[in-house]
Image 1 (cartoon, one colour):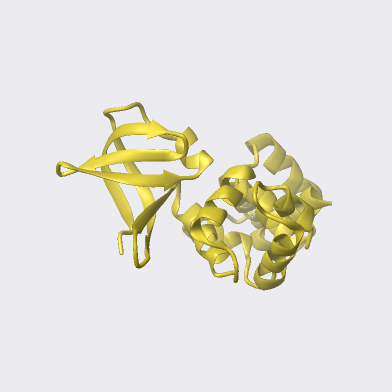
Image 2 (tube, helix red, strand yellow; image 1 turned 90 degrees about the vertical axis):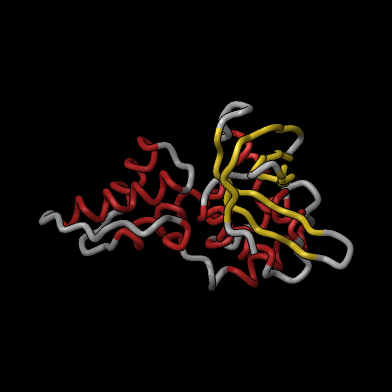
Length: 198
């Protein structure tokens, strides 16, 4: 399997990019967020990838971060959701909104994605609601040794929320709003996402 590709960006168009590595051009289908974060043509790029092998074709799908790739892998684990469908879902909504909709069991956000019906959206929620944990979608941070546990928890929660696509000011406001004494960063994030969903 190919975990990531690092090379020169040669082309980008309509959800596909071509990355040249050692004289070979890899055609990769990417999410909108990946497309939005690309450098200029002829500059170096690193794309996290998933390789799908079928009888008649080999396809590469690309992501802006390991967290986006991890969420994609969760989506394609759902029966009836293929790679192209998962890419469409990730391209239609911010990852924050998708995770929030699953946690809050709100099928409407996913059902609004192009090519996704209500039944598929509900199946995604049923199969993933107990598997999705917001902390799975950020890179692990070093343990915060700050004496002020409240601020450390809030700061860590803000890092999580911003990595999921929430603006920093909004993430800070949400974290402070939902914080209760003794809350861990994960509890703060879960409550913040719950509030966003409802």
